[in-house]
Amino acid sequence: MMSSRPRFLLSPLRPLAGGVVLGLSLLTLSGCSSEAAPSKPPRPVLVMTVGSGQAAQDPSRTVAGVVVARYASELGFQVPGRIGARLVEVGQSVRKGQPLLRLDSSDYTLALTAARAEAEQATADSSRFAALVAEGAVSQADNDRVQARARAVRAQLELAANRVRYATLSAPYDGVITAVHAEAGQVVGEGMPVVSVARPGEIEIAADIPEALVADVASLPAQAEVWGAGGAPFAVRLREVAPTASQPLRTYPARFSLSGLTADARQRLHLGMTAQLRFAAVPSKTMPGERVVLPASALSKAAQDAFVWVLPAGKDRLQQQPVQVLSHGNDTVTVSGLADGARVVIAGVQKLDGGMRVRAVERSGAGLDLVARAR
Image (cartoon, rainbow, N blue to C red; front, side, top):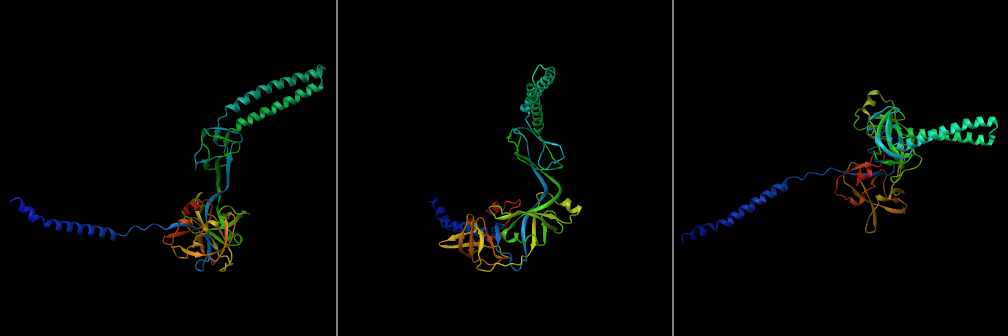
């Protein structure tokens, strides 16, 4: 009897304790849910600006680029073989004539030794027949054949010596190693690029120009902002532009010279730096309803309706813009229903929705893997 009373007295406390625990759990969960979830950074999307107006708020056009050397070479061996030694590293400065890579030249050395022995024998035969023909012991025709063979053997000897020399790849000028495409032990063919050398003295900016801008790029004033270099924008001048568009972005590779570059500014510029070219506005406009050619990757469909994703100026949220498909090409589509200055997403559209925050990356391909970034 004495042992049953405590259990009877304590039993009403059990529901109370359970309620307290449940209340504390709810308070803990409510406190956790009240904390704001960390916001995700805007996702980069590759865009193409329709027309050339690019909205009234921004009277200019920008194109991504990269700082490159004006003079650069892809070097390869003049003979095939297996690489025996790699003598340089990426980023290393080299002098003219400095060895960069060497082939295993044992086979070429053996061929040179054999050619020398044959050349000695041919020279001896040539001298002997010259004396014999003077004595009338052999005919002039036999002597001519021996002399011709001696000349051919001497040419073969020179060729064998050249092959031994070609087994060492040397720098054609003072420069910087920008890439090495082969390693020791790798078998390479004749002329296969194995190392890239850039002459750092004169630099420029490489960029891919969109179709809507290429017709006017030569006449438009332009400036370049080089990220990482600091300071004021650099004045640039178009030096060359490709006559045909590259695939698949349908852009025109171009090179821009840096004008009035001071010694201090030159010290701040390094190969591979990212640049942004800014051009003055192009006067022509694209009116709503006009035909617009887009990459086929920009088009999406919901049920029977076609649309594209557009990013309004000053916004970080995408919107669906219905379009009318007029025709299809191999990798392009012609549509109508886009206003001048509309920024259309042209890559990775299957993974987008209107709720995600994004930032625009203007279509270009000069040294930047923008398609990969847009995925």
